[in-house]
Image (cartoon, rainbow, N blue to C red; front, side, top):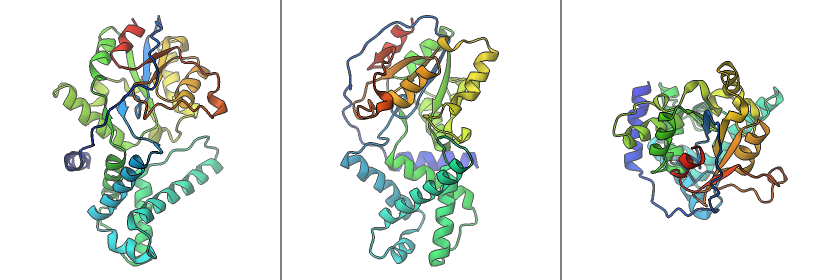
Length: 313
């Protein structure tokens, strides 16, 4: 199953290459040195990954709709959607159905005590496909699980391509060579790991086959596996347990992210040192009107990944 999905991901990436855009820093760098750091945790989208996530610009909203449009075409959903859509554009209807199922899942999870629940995107797609089957008699695919995974990958890649910043890998490898443990703490889905593997393979010229060769799985947490997403501190529970076992104090952990509340404020509440990545003004989340981010100050600000080595030297 994994080989089939990875092959599909590579074909999709080739068919729908992301458009280049100029990336400008959102703040000036503040390279305060953080000493004694033994573990660095990285957020992915908007931090290690180039991302359009949650951008309100018209361009990125159109890109998100394109993801649903191309997915509907790829998996022969257009006629069914047009049949039940009452004149609504089929990609708009598909997007609405997808997020409606997410909202239902969140509601169920919160009722059971989840603080900031995450979903399994492929399972949401399975529900959407079942719904279409009921509403217009469209036959369910025999391999529903795989189709759900492919729908999840394709819609996300086109609307929210996950690619490492070009200058991310080398300085992070330098940290690893110095004995710093590298981990991940990110809102993510299964497709995130696929994109991470593919990009690491490409940028390392095949030397890195899997993300686990660079990042330590014991100190990595993905929201789709944890069932909780940031800003929930529950996402960090596994990391903190393993840090304690290894004798790593919270003040010896640095957390790098692009969101002043979900990354920096939460990191500080957990006792971590914090690094705000401000290299891309489109993905920098300063949350100026969010009281939860008021007065929050990162320990360091970087605008280029090459600066992280200087901060942690």
